[in-house]
Amino acid sequence: METKLIKVNPENPEPESVNLAARVIKNGGLVAFPTETVYGLGANALDEKAAFKIYQAKQRPQDNPLIVHIHSPGELEKLVSGVPRSARILMEKFWPGPLTMVLNKSGAVPYGTTGGLDTVAVRMPRHPVALALIRESGVPIAAPSANISGRPSPTAAEDVYEDLAGRVDLILDGGPCEVGVESTVLDLTGELPVILRPGGVTREELEAVLGRVELDPGLAEGQKPRSPGQKYRHYSPKARVLVVEGPVEAQVRKITELAEKLTAEGKKVGIMATAQTRRFYGTGCVLSVGDREAPLTISSNLFSVLRKFDRLGVEEVLAEGIPETGLGLAVMNRLRKAAGYNIIKLE
Ligand code: TXA
Ligand code: MG
Image (cartoon, rainbow, N blue to C red):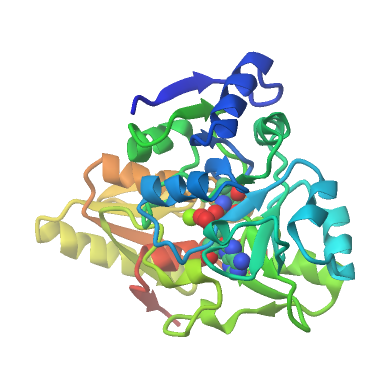
């Protein structure tokens, strides 16, 4: 299939373009579109056949459920069997935005969308292009990140094109994504709310309104994850990635030592540094992922920097870790997975 690429105004998308994209969704096709987190690969969430195309295009395992995107909080009722009080509070506070809630599904949502589960993950994004597309389509849109399964998530239309050209009908190019890591997936079906995937809304923000919020123990390496998507190799560039964690000065020393060793062995080395540390490195291809004092700069660049190392032909990426507070929790979750848990922890 030929993939159309259309530029849209991210703040105020042109109605003709939104219309065209909505027609593709209504006809059971695939549209990649920007959200505030990452680009999504969308199809009609209520049409099992359309949802199946998503799995094919992404080469995604079929037991990994999709997130259903809606354009207004009122649309939630139709998709779930009941809306608990906690969900009402969260919608009020964080929607539209990077929070996905897992609830018991209604009969309207096909199992082809939920990977066979009786629960459904729902989110209302805040990106104007995403909202306009969902509204105009007249149906909720199932959308995973618009990358080939296992690759870093796409935060620009070029990333989508790189992975999915020829596999998707249309890509709406609304420029780079603001948050850069995916939404927080929060399970509200049990006694206590549980974070299945850390993301754009932080644990601290959730706890400020809900009180105690658990982290799925499956998020740690080697545990059985409750969110099906967490068990697969993920976010990985072609290069090998090693994450160095611990005090910043120690990170810089270790990375410098490793970069020199690998370079001497003839390897093309990339260093994922930060605004604070980049000037300390003399070897390798050094890219700053962002400012340690402003974690949003780091989350928004993380996946694009990983993809950039690939484009530069880097074989070994040495990445600095950051503290797991605020957005740092989501950033480190993605980075450790990208590294296949290849981590050095320093004192
Ligand atoms: O920010 C985002 O969430 C992006 C944009 C496009 O909205 N979407 C996204 O989708 O990241 P995806 O498919 O790449 O990740 C969805 C995650 C997976 O880890 C999946 O297993 C989990 O949500 N998930 C979906 N439905 C679930 C359910 N019913 N129960 C538990 N986990 C679920
Ligand atoms: Mg994904």
